[in-house]
Amino acid sequence: ASIKPLVDLTRADMERVNQLILSKAGSDVQMIPEVANHLISSGGKRLRPMLTLAAASLFDYRGENHVKLATSVEFMHTATLLHDDVVDESDLRRGRSTARMIWGNQASVLVGDFLLGQAFRMMVEVGSLDALDVLSSAACVIAEGEVLQLSVAKNMETTEDDYLSVIRAKTAALFAAAAEVGPIVAEAGRSGRNALKSYGMNLGLAFQLVDDALDYGGKAADLGKNVGDDFREGKITLPVILAYRRGTQDERAFWRDAIEAGNSTDANLEKALGLITKYGTLSDTIGRAVHYGTIARDALAPLPDTMWKSALMEVIDFCIERVN
Ligand code: 2DE
Ligand code: MG
Ligand code: MG
Ligand code: MG
Ligand code: MG
Image 1: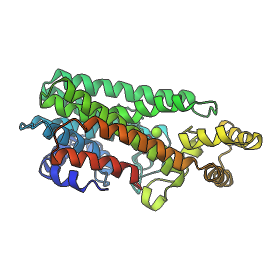
Image 2: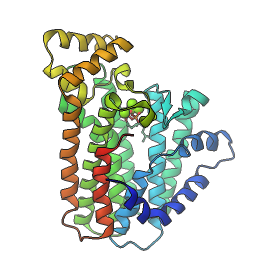
Image 3: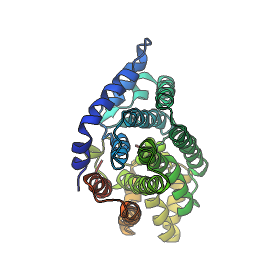
Image 4: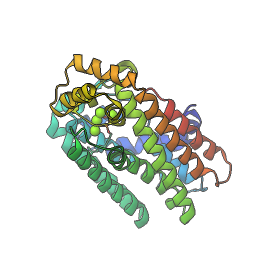
C-alpha cells in the first residue's frame, strides 16, 4: 500500500498548501522562520493536510478554504512536534537534529507557539465556527493527552485502556480533526462529518500504535529517530504493557527496575527487546493497529466510491505497513 494515490490527487492543492506554509512561517523576527523551516523542510509526509484536502474533495468541495485549513492542520502538527521534542528530550527527528538541539528548548517552545497562533489566524480567515471548534478542541485534547501521558509515565501499572486514552488524545484527535474539517468546509452535513471523524480517529490510533511498535522494532535509518527513545523516557506503550502483563515474576521486576527506577541502560534496552520478542508484543501491537484500520475502513464504506475514497482507504494500509 502507498500514499501515492493521495499524493497524486492532492498534488495541485498541496503546492498551494506548501506556499502558504512558507509564507505563514515568515516573520520579521528571523529566528522564527529559521527554526520553523528547519522542521518544515525536513521531509515530513504531510499526511494530515492531505487528509483535509481529500476529505473536502470527497464531498465535492470547490472553494479555496480547504487549503487554509490544511495549512492550519500542518502548523498545529508542526507546533506539537516542536513541543514534543522538548517534552521528550529527543535529539533526532526525521533524520535531523531536533530544533531544540540546535536552538534550544526555549526557541522550540516559542516558535511552536507562533505556529499555533498562525494556525488559528488562518482558521479565523476561513470563518467557519464549526472548523474552529473542531480544531481548537483538538488542540486542547492533544495537550490533555500529553499531560495524561506524563501522569502515567514510569508507572508499570498503566493499563491498556489508559494507554488508549493517551494515544486517542495525543495523536488520533488531530487526525480526526484534520479529516472532519473536510466535510465541514464542504458543508456536507452530519453523517459525512461523523464518517470522516471516525475514519481519522481510527486511522490516528493505528498510526500511533505503529509508531509505538517502531520505537522498539524499527531501524533508526528508516525512522529518522532513535530506536528505544520511549524506553529511555520511561514511556509506557503497548509493547511494554503487554510484555509486562505476560512476564514472569523476575521479568516483571526487570520492567519495574528499568521503567520505574529509570534503569534504561543500553544493556537493559537489549533485554527489553528480548522480552518484547519473547512475548510477540510488537505483532500484537500491529494487530491492534489492523483492528482500528478496519474500523477506519468501515467508516468510509457507505460513502460513494470515488478515487478520493480509494486513496483514503489505501492510506490506512500504508500507515500500518510504514517503516517511518
Ligand atoms: C506523538 O508522540 C505525539 C505528539 C503530540 C505532542 C503534543 C504536545 C502538546 P511521540 P514521536 C507536546 C503540544 C500541543 C499543542 C501545540 C496543541 O511518540 O515518536 O512522542 O514522533 O512522537 O516523538
Ligand atoms: Mg516524541
Ligand atoms: Mg511525545
Ligand atoms: Mg513515538
Ligand atoms: Mg518518541
